[in-house]
Amino acid sequence: PNATGDAIASYVDWIQQNGGHQAMLADALTESLGDPGAAFDRLYSSMAQVASFGRIGRFDYLTMLGKTGIAPISPPSPYFKSATGPLSGAKLLFGPGKSVGDYETETVILGNTLGFGMQIMEDAICNWQKSPTRFKPFRG
Image (tube, rainbow, N blue to C red; front, side):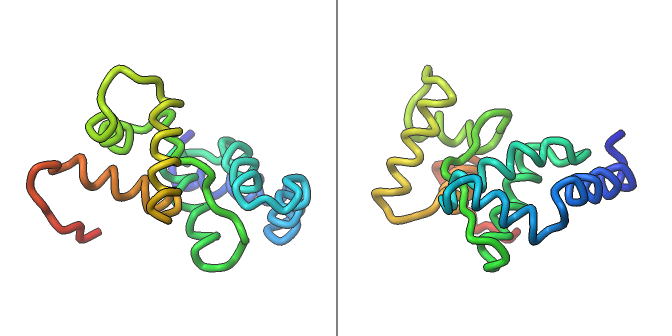
């Protein structure tokens, strides 16, 4: 159920159920009253039906739609639920013993203070936690 063919077929079904790419993106924005974060969240949730697109697949796919200008959407949070690396990084950064929601809130506050969106924050925290005491350039 998570092979490449299943991913493609379920992606096509997801798009078709929503009237095509343009209609789906327009509807998400309309239903979210033009709020880029709320539209992202709607799309993120509905994309759960696409086979093999877990948290990072949905997050990265949708952030790329925003970054490339295909859709005026952006993640309102780092979506740490079901995360491994980014959540580990948030625990290192903000201290242990908090809820996932608390780590998301603190990351949003820090990102807003620094002027960085959640895609940058999620990516930076994930990469930093791999080597928090010694800089290692990320090469992709």
